[in-house]
Each structure stands twice: as C-alpha cells, then as structure tokens.
Image 1 (cartoon, rainbow over the protein chains, first blue to last red):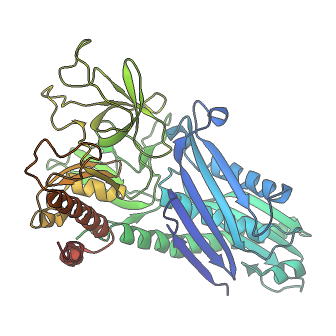
Image 2 (cartoon, rainbow over the protein chains, first blue to last red):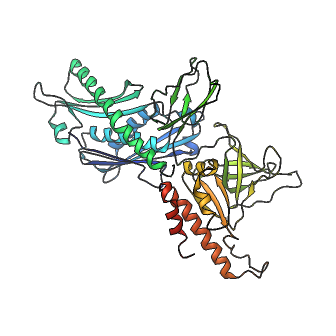
Image 3 (cartoon, rainbow over the protein chains, first blue to last red):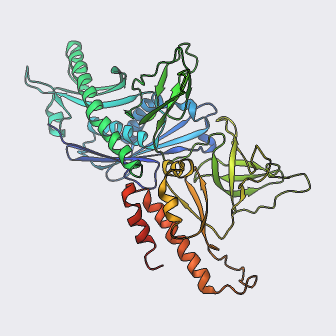
Length: 224
Length: 259
C-alpha cells in the first residue's frame, strides 16, 4: 500500500500551489495566473501555458524538457483557454525528493500531473474536467497482481510499467495520457487500463474530493 | 451546499426554467443543448425565485487571482498617466486596465482630474471583454455623482486580503467583522473586491512632507495614535480571515491591546 499526502495552498505568494508526497517522493507545484503574457508568448484567442519542471538538484536538461512538454500537452486540453485570451498561466513543478534515475521518468511524471491538478484547482483556473494519474507496474512473475504507485525498485524489476492519466467527467473516464515502457501485449494493456480506471476513480472520489473539501473549509473558516 | 469538482454533474435542469450562471459554471459554446459544467472546485449555490421560473447558479470558491467583472468595485493603483486616460493596476502582474479622464463626475475637456502615478483610486469596472482592455469609471452610473468613487486619500492604509473574504465584507451586511471593529474606533473604509482594502482610522497615517501646520492644534501624539489604531484595525481585519466567527472578539482584543 502506498502512502499519500496532499497539501493544497502551501505557498503564500503564488495563486495556487500543492505539496504532494507519495512513497517518500515529494514535489511542490505552483500555479500563477492568469496574468499578463509576455509579448512573444501572447496568443490572441487563448491562454498560453508555461510549464517549468525543475529537478531535485542541478539544472534541467532534455529529460525535464520532455516532461514539461508532456504536461503542457495534457493541460492544454483540460484548461478552458478561451476564458483567458492573451493571458499566461505558469505552472512550475519543483521536485524536492525523487528516486531520480535518468532512464525512468514514470514516477516523476505521475507526481507532476497529480500535483498540478490540486494546484490548478487551488488557483481557481477553469477546467473542463478533473484528471487523475496513476502508475501501474507489471511484476515479472507470471500471474501476480498489478502494482499501483510502485517504488523505483519495483519499476526497475517490473516487466513493464505504465503511466495512465484519466479525465473524470460524471464518472465517465477517458484516457488522456498513456506512457508505457517495457514488454507487454495488447490484451495485457487492456487489463491494465481497466484496472487503472478503477484506481483513478477511487482516488478521484476519496482523495481529490477530500482535499478540495478541506481546502474550502479552510478558505471559508470565517463564515458562520 | 455540496462540494463540486470540475467535470462533476451539477444536477441543474435547465429546461422549463430560465437559468443564469455565475462564476465557476460554464456553458460550452456552440453546442445546442444547454449543458452546464462546473469548471472550479467549489460549493454549489443555487437560488430560485418564488414562482420557480428563474434560477441563478454559481460556485463559491476562493482564488487569489482577480478576474474583473462588470460593476465590480475595485481599488487600483495608477501606473501610467496619458493625455486621455490613466493606466491602472488592479493586482500584481495583471494586465493594466484603463481609466478614461472623462470617467469622472463633472469631467469635461477643460475640467479634468489631476491624478499622479502611484495614487490609488476606488473605481467600478465599466466594461470587461476578455479580448479587449478592461475599462474603469469613477462615478456612480445612476446619479452621475462621485458616489464614493475617486481618489483614495493618501493618509489611508491599503492592504491585501483574500478575494472571497473581501466579497463577504462588501456584500454581506450581516458579517460582523466591521461591526465589531466600530466598537473600538472610528474608521473610514473602502473595500475593493480585487482583494484590496483601504482603511483610515481618525485622521489616518500622517503624510510625510506635509507638515501639520494646517491644524496646528493637533499634536504629534494624536497622529501617532491614529497611525497605531489604523495598523491595529488592519491587523484585526487581516487576522479575522483565518479564524472562525467565535474568535473575532479575541482577535479584536489582541489587536487593540495597549491602545
């Protein structure tokens, strides 16, 4: 079983933020916006998204740039950009503790996507639907059950591992991101997606709803 | 009120009933059937009229970023002075909005307001179209008089609060924070729902450079007292957004301790 801790609104000076801790890995995500866009990134009809991923140590390189691109493509279809023409929304993902192995990005991508959701809701950015991400690892032994939110060791040992992101809209789930790595068959993948869907719906109902509810309670504490 | 996440089913039926939607609810344009979706995480609030022919729905939530709406009353800082208009900043890093020199009471080509950079105004949002620049005005539309809008005195103190708290202070007359404050001191207040509050107790904060020779009977001690009271009152208003209503009295006593 994995341990999960989510704190929304931890940064005082950004419009939305989230501290996300899972299995000892830690990420802090901030959202600023909608704000005035720089002239070169201004889009006349929609919002321009600026995603920055920062590694635990050192400078970001092509590995982080790839993550940024994946997150940006995902958020672009979720955020209602037409509500904020000529504006910018900045999303900064800063990893604090991560099992950083250059060849595996699954855990980091998963954490970044999940924490971005809370930070965006905290910032009050308009979104078409909610989204939840999960990592599934297929253990090497035949017939053993799938591992959700695996540790880095489990990922390295696994036959294949997958980052699956579902969007949730009235209990209707759609895959919006799938990153697979390793050896697997079509049939196997179908099972994984079905299992991941159930997992994502559970997280949406139990974790996301609770976190937002407690955030709202905190925001309206002065209301009698 | 129930907690709603983006994409949830709102459970609002829109046939047979005229529906107005407010913040947090969105109708996807270009689609014929009126499907309303929530776009923020918040508390659903629906109000119906007695006949059941009209309803208004919105999501109540807090965000730190201010997005203008027509008839919002806001506090802005003048950041640019031009021949025909002023550039006004409503919140850090937001696009500037314009305030025409003609948008003042009794303004004519010859009789124009004289505002400088850095001064603050209390104004009303007169036009907000996302694709265009937002415009402000500094007079009451119904009377043509100033109606409390216009330049904010520099002896006041401006501070930031949460947007939802500013809305409650301005729109809920039953909210006790200001009523309780009035038991401690006299004050003048302007609440901008862009999360800014202008506050002045007594004669407020003395303006440096402007000597006290105008009313020389007023001692420096009095100014210090007004300054202290203003800061205490501002502190009290800021603290109240983090506590439950039962603790307002305690915060008030703590803020005004020694005054």
